[in-house]
Image (cartoon, rainbow, N blue to C red; front, side, top):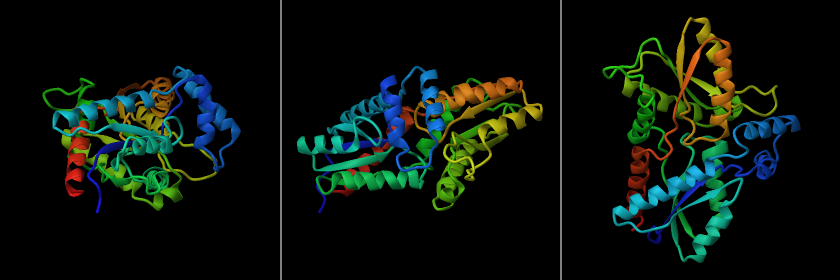
Length: 307
């Protein structure tokens, strides 16, 4: 029998918080992978171009604080903490701290909305390995198609101010993006279907007249086939179709980090400008109230099932 849920653990990728952390962080990320040194150096320069650090940890900590407050307001008093795969606070450190604090059962939220081997599956494996029976864990179910997740993404699109009388302008397409994956890896998971479902639901909610899905941030061996089309190729094509303005939304990411701040805000924006295309980026959902409510309600439901 499981103990009552008495903690919440957010599990994420993490990010470097200072220039000195960039290369050690990247080396941990690519450990065991065939990633050329030149590619690591290029990504390190991406971090340098956006301030020498990632806001990922700060934004995740903010999400923890707001979620803990949301639960407290509803009479659920439990710590909400974060454990990262590739930086401090590392997942085993967080698990050990929960155990030392006397916590017995954590509700685990994976900070990746779409299921793939490199995200969802590996996060589960690493949480289970880190706990090793020290505390019980229960995972929040996938939320890529949850209406509150869809509504949070739709709200960020509405915040661009482009809606007129409740309608999206027909001449401004929306391009949703998510991290690209090797085709072989994607074929062994529901990743593409999950991402497509999110896009379709957001587009349907806002009745977008024109939208499509593009992939971004591919890495690794250039000879390995990855998911396409790439966002930069899509932007060039749209410009060639006489589109004047486009909105990009990274539905594959919950918060800003280098893949958003550099790959979209710098690289994709430069591609668009060179093609004569105006690019606006809708924000990531981060700690949007609808997303907070989604997570809070899932935790309360899970806590009830554990009794």
